[in-house]
Image 1 (cartoon, one colour):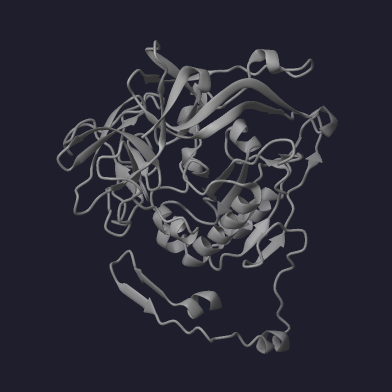
Image 2 (cartoon, helix red, strand yellow; image 1 turned 45 degrees about the vertical axis):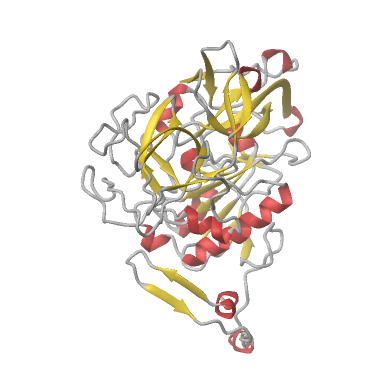
Length: 441
């Protein structure tokens, strides 16, 4: 708080009001009142947090509870055993005390950190070296750290506070530096951008932190503002609407089918043609027609995500999205995206299409005796010849075998097959490196 007061701040609220705080660089807190009142900060002992946040250790249990079952995370040795590649941003869809109760239940799931809405206070539950069960995709779990933010995605003004944004950004910067995680949307994932591991899981994947999480502001706080890095005819764009002015219609915040309150948003809607009366883009993995529902991700992109340009028409830009052209309104005076440099993948010469995967698992030959071979199961999507998708980089085919309480049986299986992570739709996906060619935009 004092850091903000000393530096000063200016911002436009979602209601369009100008808020200005004059800088007071010499201001220092009088902590004697705290001592006289007997107040003290929570103990940070045992935590992995930067000194700039309030943090305490509330451990998640690693316990066996009968019939060979255990919870609620797995012991590991990261990053020595496997890289930590991702940080996953969640919201809790629940209030603080209930969330803490759940993460301390050995029969429930787990995550590394919880962040409180009112003041940004952090509770750590699982060490970064260990694998928490939070993303709904085991490949992502094995290579990520999960951050749960107290709140509800349909009630951003009540829960997504500036204190929580700032505390979260400080924590993410600390973790990213410690584990060499790039500060971009291919590595700082929303829970809503984690792919279904197999086709059957796609409809049930999570949608938080939702369209009202202010990714543009968040990346400014991370010290990586989303800016243009190329000329207007670049082959790649990063989604970056003006959050306060960008107010797409959503439904279902309070009751199914009913309009949500008008609100600033990080989301940009996608159409099948350069016309707002044309149908919304369809996600075949969901098996239903697209809607404007606040939890329907089929036809929208989010601030910070980058896509290869497929076409342009006046004020409209088309991107490659889920194997098809998807159009969004992008006028020069009020752009919804900025041109950037980037690497894209496309099917290698001679291939009409290549499969897309929800996890980057090794080939069968890589598994040692005693570790069951995991299916390399493609999703119902393909990248067609001539299409391009922005890549977040190359990753190994890797599987963390941890199905028993006895850590002695745990194994990290790493194969010869390599993959590229791509921004395929709203969610990321993976393609085999042998199937694609990488080009600069």
